[in-house]
Image (cartoon, rainbow, N blue to C red; front, side, top):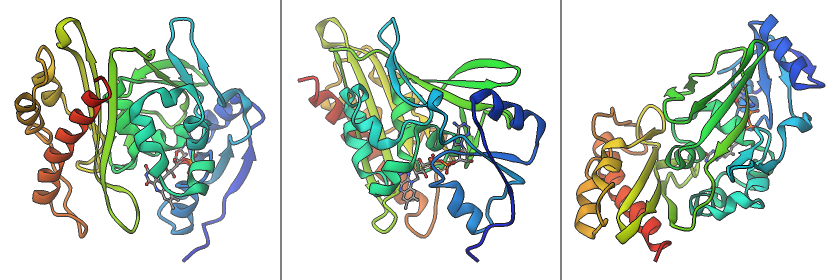
Length: 287
Ligand SMILES: Cc1cc2nc3c(=O)[nH]c(=O)nc-3n(C[C@H](O)[C@H](O)[C@H](O)COP(=O)(O)OP(=O)(O)OC[C@H]3O[C@@H](n4cnc5c(N)ncnc54)[C@H](O)[C@@H]3O)c2cc1C
């Protein structure tokens, strides 16, 4: 079936209007680029009584530098716009963005849509987790800022309430002593990650690892931060042996997905291999 159930359509003229509709209508759903929502609605795997189109809200577009150097990425920023912005300073984005979907997906798909949709194999969340990004959620009753870590709760499930709109995503200020990278093993037909690993390392005096952020996607019920890998790296010189033993914790304590494309054993093994590669690639950018 390729025709969605019928729905009402409301083009929001402002963020306030969108929030008002979301607050008053439990059956309302936001549409941004429509790259995930429309196919799901056509397959009748998702439905909405009212689609609230936020696609033309200029307030949600654009990338700006905050006073403290952090980057604020509007929720409606497309992948293509992100690739053409100061955010490309981060190696994780240089690696991850060009292979997401195809030209149309990168021109239409938005940062906010990718994060809110919370596909367990989505690339961008892994990069945001590793960077330690924050997400700003706005509703008619107020605004709150939450860490990306903890936001993804399950397949297509997040900590956002129904009446909340994701507004900007906040990235930490770029630093000279930081290196980052993203590597993925893709399912050849869909291009989605069977295993995707983002690594961000910050080195301090004596090249000791001050900060390690490891975001993993495609492997478990939702993208997650591999905190045991991070803990095993911090305070070390990240030698090859340290990286190998840290990466061995890539799926520690996590249920591992198993499907027709890759069983759990293979995915878990590849998660370790790709975690090792991502850390090494992030370090190489610091050399
Ligand atoms: C052919 C194809 C290939 C793809 N390949 C990849 C890939 O390789 N890697 C990958 O990571 N992704 C891939 N994708 C998915 C793509 O990244 C997402 O579809 C896209 O980023 C979603 O953004 P959107 O603006 O289109 O969201 P929409 O489809 O408009 O919305 C998606 C969901 O997010 C909600 N939403 C949207 N914006 C907000 C907001 N600001 N606040 C709150 N909720 C919001 C909507 O209500 C909906 O539930 C692919 C998609 C397609 C169609």
